[in-house]
Image 1 (cartoon, rainbow, N blue to C red):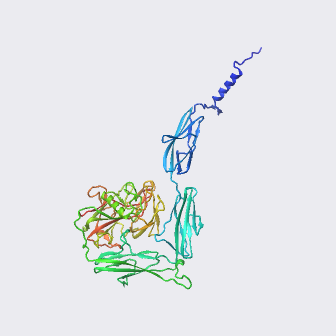
Image 2 (cartoon, one colour):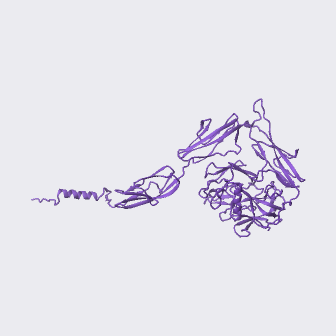
Image 3 (cartoon, helix red, strand yellow):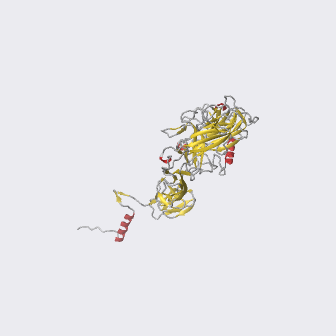
Length: 608
């Protein structure tokens, strides 16, 4: 008889056992049974580095992925306060800031948390920069001119641009070609926008028949207005006019109304033989040339002739070189800054170690700033090419006859990688007219690069004010080249590198330019500012005298008055000097370390 087996559990008990088996095991995958009970939550952020950015006034939503989050409690904590209780966080802010937020998830299986960083940024609408001549934009009729503005934040989402003329959109490209046959003034508006906002720039283009010719004589420095020149009997003075928009010029010179037959070059070397006052006049004839835009024939019935402009300068001639020499002073250091005008640079306007304050917005305050710095043996940065400082002493510095007469302290150094040398060209001046001001003749001191290839004695560079904060400063020079002083916000965060006490939208500096002497290692990318052999401030040359004559600190270069020369390089003998000017001599940018900018700490008389 077959034996029957009977279940010792009832139906209800069997179902209960089956249910327990189901809830304590997972699905069988690859014959592995995984136990899901007691799992702590796992957070995966929707930002790889845990950093989230948002602009002011906009919403930011953070929605991390959380595993094993059954019956979880979510907490968002910032600054010790709970700011959210849900799986996602939505925030917005009305001012720039950085803050850290803890995201915490708690379940019966455990707790997990992640720290995130929220960077709240300023909105960045477009900023339009269009460098225009200070005298206004004047163009020739029937001639194409291509406008290419610099636009900051053009890479932001939603960027677009419109050029508007006569209430009509004439272009939606980054550049606009202007050409007009009719004379007159034409307003143009540039409208640029992105997701952060809209910016407009309005300017006028004046269409003229001929270029706005201009002839003038330079002043001794940027902030001076007088053009009078001062010399002594039998000492040559070099007169070179500044020309604007002059095509194919020819020159005629006269003294007190008498034409000098053989004076036909741009520079006239005038040597007065008697004490007195002379009026020297240059007549500049602009020849229209033969191109289609500047043809002599305006119509078949009208022919344009030559354009002649004139400019005069007063030359004062004194009898003796030593008539106004100053003796008796005892201070070996310079005791006055007469003018401080740097080119744009990373230390200009800097509120930190450079010691600027926001109210240094006049020429006088800038000079007072430079004097205070030099008096404390702290550096004064001259910015990019052409930036300068002019100092004086409580006495005249005599020419020793071949020894070093004065020294200028800098911060140059050499290293195995080339070091850092930012050469400054040195000029000297006598107080010929005896008025105690540096308004006489500047004489450059000869250096190792004088007369060599790459050195330009008659150079100028115009710098243009940026349209907005934290922008590069653009420039154009006498060689027809353009460039920029790069904004290095990672090192120097002031809004503008353009001097706050220059109130025009551009300014032009004149002087000698040395060839760039910087190199970059192709392997390491390290930039080196190399030294010239001798003759320059802030430069480790053979004329380096070690440290400060009194304190022994820093790095000094010695300079000889006997190295003074005329603009054409011929030597001049000066018994003494009263003023010294140092001017950044190189127009160069060394990658991430920025522009070459001469720094000076002190000026010392070595004959005391």
